Length: 128
Ligand SMILES: [Cu+2]
Image 1 (cartoon, helix red, strand yellow):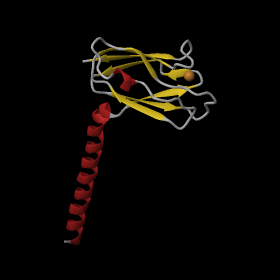
Image 2 (cartoon, rainbow, N blue to C red; image 1 turned 135 degrees about the vertical axis):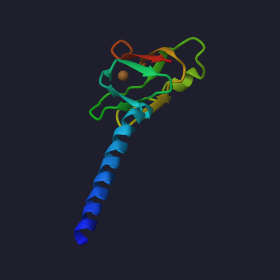
Image 3 (cartoon, rainbow, N blue to C red; image 1 turned 45 degrees about the horizontal axis):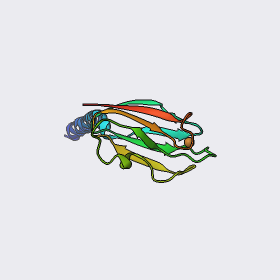
């Protein structure tokens, strides 16, 4: 009798473990909702190009080792883009800063750092 219940317990644990694994695997596609990270560093954006699907977000993270201030500034966006100013940071930062933006309008976005515009630029393409 004891042996039997032990067997049942083993099966229950196994099923639980499998279900847990399945839940973890199912979570992977939901990563779409997680922002894509872009490094704001001396003197580049990394990566310099990003392809997004409508509704995805980008999180710019200022690199720890920076010694110069940088910003994120939208130089050009798709036609009819609303609230253009919200795609740029209001201030500059050296380190310890993040800037997150969700892209809901398909098209091509070009960003620069206004302090280092020739070195620091990046392109984001948002598709439907
Ligand atoms: Cu800069």
